[in-house]
Image (tube, rainbow, N blue to C red; front, side, top):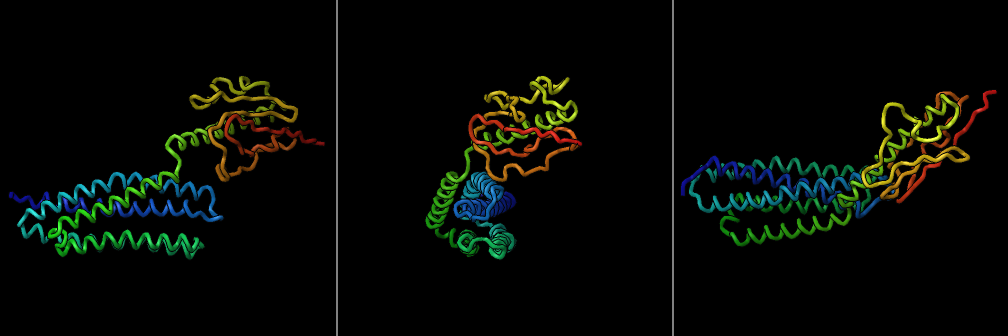
Length: 305
C-alpha cells in the first residue's frame, strides 16, 4: 500500500477535532434538556428560552459533527490497520495523547460550570444529573482513546464497531428526546412574528401618543397617523392591524399565533413629555392571548389648574 503520511495525519486530526466538537455540544444539548426537563421555580422565561436555544444549537452541531467524526474515524482506523508506516503510527499516538490533554482541560471546564451553578443555587437534582453527564460522556471518550493509543481497537475491529454503534444509539436517542422539549421551527417563527407585531404596535402607539400631545385629541383612524410613509403591515397571512376609538381611549388590535409569556417584553417607563397634556396611562401593558387580541388604552387628561 502506498503511504501518504501527511494525508493520514490530517484525517486523524480531523477525526479528533470533530470528536471534541461532538462531545462539547452534546453536553450543551444535555444541559439544556436537563434545565427544561427539571425546571426551577425561580427560572425566568428568558432562562427557559436560553435552555431551548442551547438544545437547538447542540442538536445542530451534533447532527453535523458526530456523523463526520464516525466517518473520519472509520477511515483513520482502516488506514492504521493497513499501514506499516512507523512514522505515521508514532505521530498518531502523540496526537492522541496531546488531544486528550487539551480536550480534557476544555471539557473539565464544563464540570467547573456545573459546580459553579450548584454553588449559585442550582437545584441539587440538576447538579447531580449534569455532573453524571459530564463524567459519563467525557469518560467514554477518554476510555476509547486511551485504549486507542494502546492499539486495542486496531486489534479488535468488531469491538470497536460495537462501541461506536452504542454511541450512535445513545446520541440518536438524545437527539430524538430533546426535540419534544423545544418548539418546532414553525412555532419559533410564529412566536418571532408575534413579538414583531407587538414592536410595530408599540411604534404605532408612540406615534398616536405624539399626535395626542400635539393636537390634544385622538386621531380618527390610522390613515391620519403618518404623512409620507406607509403604515406598518402585519406579517404575511395575518389580518391587518386595527385601531378603534373607545369611550376611555382607543384599542390597537392584532392576531397572534401564541399567548404571550412572562418576561417576553421588559417594562418600559411610559413616555410622557408634558403632564398638562393628555397621555396614555397604561401604555406598557402588552399581555396578549392567542387569536385576535385588542390592547385597550386609556387616555388621561391632566387638569393643569
